[in-house]
Amino acid sequence: MEAWSERYGPDAGPTEEQISAHIGSGLWEDLNGYLQRAYDVKPIHAYSKCSAQPGWNVKYQKAGRSLCVLYPMAGYFIALVTIGERERPEAELLLAHCTASVRALYESTAPCNGSRWLMIHITEPAVLEDAKRLIALRRAPLTKK
Image (cartoon, rainbow, N blue to C red; front, top):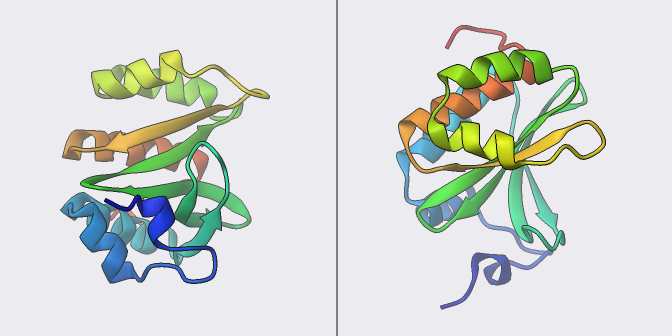
């Protein structure tokens, strides 16, 4: 079976429908819809040659600042949320209310240049809600949706 990172090359990316079909989870539509409504942003499809997660991804930015990067996987997706020094105190308070998997991820992710790059595997609704709350630390939503 062809890997997602090999299916679409740097010159021809997947459509929204192809990404959604590959993931096969309503959580994908939930997060994308939320980000677009709550932050008034549009997704940016980008091709990455990064060895850690090569291939096409979907980026969300607001006012020049990254909210998150989403990586499609078969049956789920990964949300990269960066917690910088500015967000760290609030993030550590918030973690007490997060799922065990997100707490463990935060603890096991070593800081790099003062930030933790959390690769959150979105596989269930509770983890999705954790990701939304962590993204809100980077920039508050415009709406309460």
